[in-house]
Length: 492
Image (cartoon, rainbow, N blue to C red):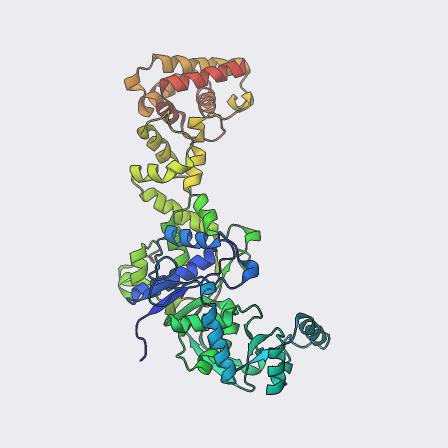
C-alpha cells in the first residue's frame, strides 16, 4: 500500500563539523515535513570509515538542537525503522546487495586497486572518462564461484543498462534526463562489507518510508543510479528536491578556506538561532509577495519565526541558482533579533560572553548592554565592546590628547573632571545630570573636546566608546575617580 504520510530526512555524515549548508538542508526538510503534518527523521551516514570523526555526531545533535530543529525519529529517539545509524545496519545492506546479485542487477568484481589504477591511467591517456570497464561482468559462473571459494577479495557493483534514458521530475529543477551510457557501474558493497552511499541511501530511504528526498545539487548525478536501484528492487521511488549550493561572495562553493562554515563557529561568535534560521530559510527560497500584500503596497516580509516559516515555506519555490552567503546580511538579521530582546533576555543571552561581573549589579550591566546592542551585530561583539567597564585596557598617554593639547592642559582637564565628579552627589550621578554639568563647564575651554575627550579616554581606555556621561553613570563615582586619577598619573 502506498505511503501517503510525508516523511523527510536529514542524513549527514559525521566526518567533521555541521556545515551551515547542511543546516539549511535540514531546515528545508524539517519545514516541508511539518507543513504537511509529516515526520522529520535524522539518520547518520557513518559508513565512510576513513573520514569518520568521533565528536562529529555530537556536533550534529547540538547544532540541530541549538537551531530549534527537532527530529521525530533518529539516534536517541528510536522509531519503528531504526537503528538510525548506518554502521549498525550492515547486515541489512549486505542482504540487499546479494539480492541484487541474485536478480542479475549486480555482480561480483574482483579487480584490485592496482588493476583499477592502471585502468584509469590508460583511460586518461586515451582521453576517456574514468569508468570501470566492466571486465568482471564477463566472468562465468564457474570463475566467480572459484574466486569466492578461494577467498579472493571482492566488491559488488551494480549493472548499469546501456542505451537507457533515465528521467525524473525534480521538485526544484523540473524534468531531468540522463543517458545510462554516461554512468559507471557503481560499487554498492565494498570489500570490507560496508556499503557505499548509493546502496545505503536507497535501502534506508525505502525502509524508513522516506517520501521526499531533499539534498544539495551535488547529488544530482547520483540520482539516476538511485532510480535504477529502486527499480531493480521493485520499490516505489520517492520525490527528489535538489537544493542550490551555498556560495561565497565570489560565487565559489562555500568552504572553510574562505570563512566560517561550521555552525559551531557562529554559535561561539554569538549569533542567534532565530537569526540564522531566518537567514538560511531565505537563502534559496523567496516567499514572494501575496496579492493581499501587494494591494496594501507593503514590502516583502523578511522576518519569520519558525512557525511562520512552517506556514509559508514552499519547496516548489526554491531557486535553482546557487545562493550567496552574505555575512553582512546575516549580521543585519542578528541585530534585528538582538534589539527585540527584553533587558532580562539580553542579560541572560550575553552573560556567557562577559568577564566576571561580580563588581556590577544587573541594572548596571543591562545599561552597558543596551548602549551597545544598537551598534553590535552579535552577542560576542556586545561582550567585547563592554569589556572596558570590567577591566580598563592598557593605553598610551597619547590617547588622552585632544588635537594639539599640551600635557599640562590634559592634566588640568582631567583635574576639572575629577573635581566635578567629587562635587556631584550620588543622587545626581546620572547621565542626564552629568551631561548638563560637564557641558556647562566645557564653555570655559577653547573647545568642549578639550574637557570631554580626555575624560572619555580615561574612563574607557579606547578610541571609540559610548558618551562619557553614560560611562560615568555605569561606573559610579568611585570607579570613575580611580580611572581619572590613573590617567593623571599617566600624563604626569
